[in-house]
Length: 226
Image (cartoon, rainbow, N blue to C red; front, side):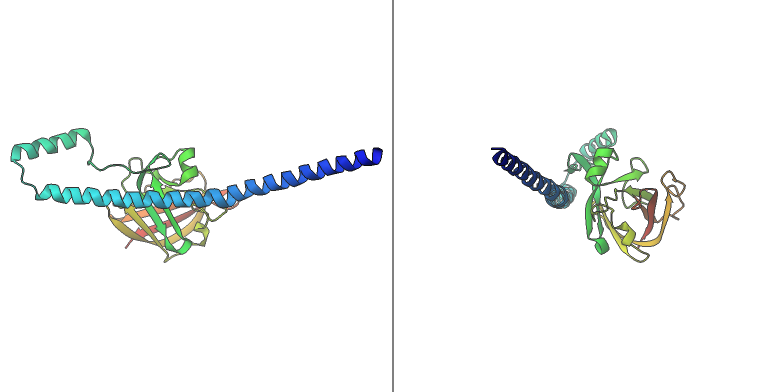
């Protein structure tokens, strides 16, 4: 009896161990394979929708330019546009966060929405503009784009592999696409913002910012529009 009881106990323990291993493997598979893959698909779909929206806006604008309207109606339209502070473009959202454009880094295979918000939840989702507030992409001056280093190849994890001469491509809500050439990379303290508001001599520049692999500093990359 005692031998049978001992054997049954070992069987139960073995079954529990097997179930725990299967569950653990499933969690790891979902966390590191399925979930990142789903996010990549969702990001790609958001970028497609972004491009489609821009094309529709541009086509509508062209159609409006071809229509004949009287001067009074035109003046009223301009006044309404100024008072509302909008351009009439429909915003595109990724994971419920408004997109200001998207970034492509050919060397590291990055193609990500650039989000308007820089909340912790937004930064878990994609990259975002940290500086300045209410920034417009591809305009003269410096724009800081921040993203996490998850050390898994996602978001800005592979920024450490970038070097001078590599390209970064930014597309904005107007449909304008600029190519930026990296000219400097260095490490800075996490609270160092001294290089944010720098003189670019009227040229559009971007700064890519992410934490180092050990999390103690930040990897900073300067790039200038061609």
